[in-house]
Amino acid sequence: MPAVREFPLPDLGEGLVSAEVVRWFVQVGDVITVDQPVAEVETAKAVVEVPCPYAGVVTSLAGPAGSSVLVGAPLITVTASVPDVPNTPDGPGNILVGYGVSTEPDRRRPRRRRPGAPTTTYGSGSGSTVIPIPRPEARLSTRPHDPSPIPASTTGPGSTGPSAGGTGSVAVVSPLVRRLARDHDVDLRTLPGSGPSGLIMRRDVEAAIAAPRPRPAPDSPAVSVTPAVSVTPTVSDAAFPSTVVPGPTGPDRIEPFDVLRRRAAQVYTRSRREVPDATCWVDADATALFAAKDTLNAGGAEPRIGLLAIFARVCVAALLRAPELNSSLVTDDGGQATGIRHHDGIHLGFAAQTPRGLAVPVVHDAHRRTTAELATEITRLTAAARAGRLTPAELTGGTFTLNNYGVFGVDGATPIIAHPQTSMLGVGRIVERPWVVGGALAVRKVVQLSFTFDHRVCDGATAGAFLRFVADATEDPTALLRHL
Image 1 (cartoon, one colour):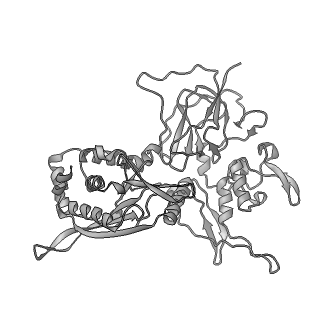
Image 2: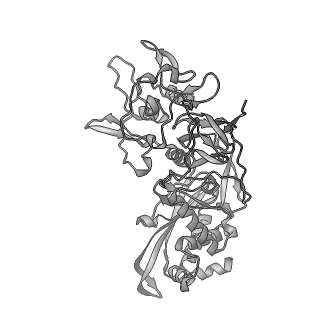
Image 3: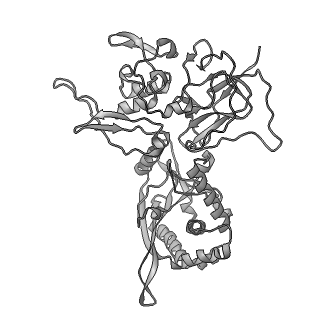
């Protein structure tokens, strides 16, 4: 008997407990090699490709695209009917890569499929679920799905139950989807599914939760009514179908959050709820900063050093002078702050706009890097973010954030601190304005700098001193030499 190997979903970092399958690269019956990517999964941090460490014939998958898989739960099982292919001498196998769905064509080698291979099976054992897996492009299809429920034989264990008018099957595989529906009083028997063969996915339940509820009859107990919300579509949400619901003047479109938006919403809400933040700002003459940039890049010097890298250098110097701002709060079981955790290293996050939305890559150990090294790493991380290739490690672990919202043409902002961090520097647009120099008016390049901080870790004097240091270094970059 050939050995059956079970590959569990690995820990993708930062305490994440589950991931959602975005698409499968293999089907049951496919022959795979060691470290071949088998699935693309989405976590609260990123979208990554998961390579399988075993070679052989795929015998089962964890579920259809859109299913949630717990860390440590079986993702795929493989029958070792072909010999393992050893890793090359150059190093270990593939690592988890990705952030966003790549738009490049799939150049993988054609997969061999055994003649008469079985239909794709989710799970293992006698209670497995048999549902054909669609190809990756099927999830992006805009064709209307068949709202009819899938047969009881394909709904999986625990997917049937009593109904108000009798008994019948409910097209749900994931217990997480069932729990979400139960917690929000959503009747699964009334929902059309957007998954394969009408399978009800988590996004379907979330759309039902966001949709307006029918108004109660006059003699019925009052229930809360959630107003419909119109959301502008974005390119990055093509894989998450919207739901059209009736509105007061016409159909409104409800767009469910994807995993990253849900995670961002949780972070923003928690930060705004828990952090007593304050913001101070100052205008600074950045003319000398531009001159310093031009000098550093004179003669075609490489790497090219941009303004963001110089501001990163300034932030590192300022944080070394005010270490209480490179920190996070220690809380008890009740969420009450009990102390301040001062981080040994400065891990500088910076905001980067991507086709998928806002990303905050992290330059780890920024305090150990030269200005040229900061510029190189910022350039690399920015390119990876825009190409959708950031890893979870490159998106986590930040202790301070640099936010250049001036690229959007705005002067200032009061950003939300990225919990659990305690401070953030904002850089507005740099424009020519009248400025007093030596008692006379002159046209100078002026920038507005803003600093948002958690008032629990410092008072206004510390925050003001930090921002003043940044402003002074902006107006006279050579002053940094005293602190490097």
